Length: 105
Picture 1 (tube, rainbow, N blue to C red):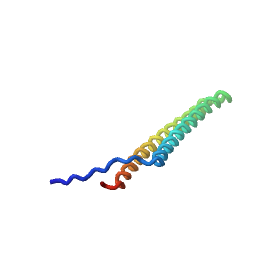
Picture 2: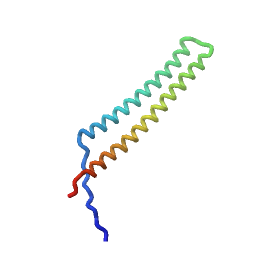
Picture 3: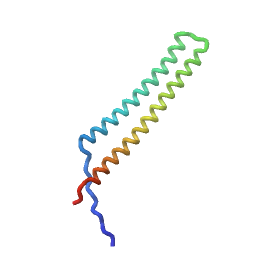
Picture 4: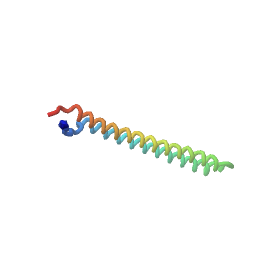
C-alpha cells in the first residue's frame, strides 16, 4: 500500500516578486540592445575612418573595427542568453519555494 501525499495547490508569486522578475528581464533586454548599439557604432566608425582619412591600409583598420564590432555583438548575445537562462531557472525556483512553504491542508 502506498500512502498518497497530498499535493500542494499552486500559489502565484506575489505581485512584488512578479514585478521584480519582469524588471530584471527588461533590464536584460536593454543591456542586449546596448551591446547591439555599441557593435553598430564600431562598424560605422570603421567605415567612417577608412573613408575620411583615405589611409593606405585603411581596409585593415576597417577590418579591425568590424572584428571588434562582431566580438561585442557575440559577447552581448552570449551574455543575454546566459542571464535569460538564469532568470528562467530562478523564476521556477521561486515558484517551487512558494509551493514548499505553503501549509498543507
